[in-house]
Image (cartoon, rainbow, N blue to C red; front, side):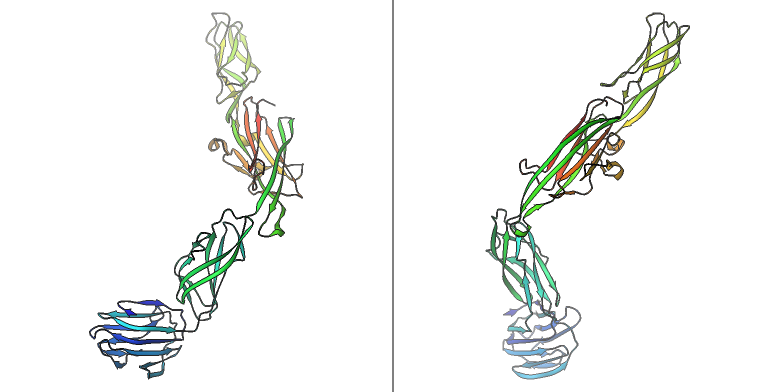
Length: 478
């Protein structure tokens, strides 16, 4: 082989090494070159070729060469000494050197070429490569490279797969160079590409590595199994809907059974727990400030009133209009008694006075109201339990979120959704999971709707849906 310019090759970092430059020649005497070893730092030992002369590791002139005439240099390097021969004649024996790792060798030239049969010898670097015995389809797995040597470093420059493996596997993560220290290990991630395996398939995975200890080709056996099959039956049932003082109570039961068929490990085949998460979220309905009318401040009693009528305006469907009776003293309205509070949405209602006597006029007043907020969380609360006795406590636990599928004005009126923070386990031995929802009446006739959702890890086999839903519709005052 012929070397021109800068040529550097990685070694394993061992301290004991032998070398042979066989039939070495330099093509002209005006150029210069060097051959040697280094630790990739300040420690270097090298032969220098300079205008027909060879200088050794200690920069001693030890030989003269002629243009294009071959010669041979061989030698041994240890932790503390070096020895070498030129044309098989010993020149140096056991000369002292500093202790460092031989991490690279180099052949560099300037204005010349160096031709030689170069050989580097060192103790074999022991290593092993392993993969799992089996995986499931589409699964990622690691190829582990173990460096069994106590003094050699392995560097991997590239990783690829043989032609028979690339249609079933891919190299996912590899950053070159990968350095594996003595007695250390490294890993390369592969992924199986199969999606339609039936039961199991055996593969030979051929891995090709370019390294500082040469090209490594390793064929490893791997069994790829069909992924587990899950058959689930999920049920959400309304058990009761009960009117109660100041509200309404709903009791649901969620039931699930999940059968797992594990093709990789038959001992794992059988019924397993369902993982389910319960939530209740706002769907529709008026959220905001409501006003109840409690009285009227007379700002002007007017004159000429005989039989006045009181009218509260600005009713929003389906609000109940407030009603009242005006008291008259000498044709002047001086008070209003509220006979029906009614309710108003969004703003306090206005009040107007009229009379059958056309001379009556001038009376004005302002309604006195008690405003209150109607929000999702002060209308609804929810609780869950494996026992039919359920404590409704999601609000006190802080299990709220801003909104679900429907838009909700949470920036003004707080959260519009309850949701469990972690899934619960519903198993064959703990088959029933109860959900209780409480609606608290907010003294208005405006409908409001919520949605109960149970999201399962394993979809129902019949519907192929992972979510069971139930509508909670409040359409009248309780």
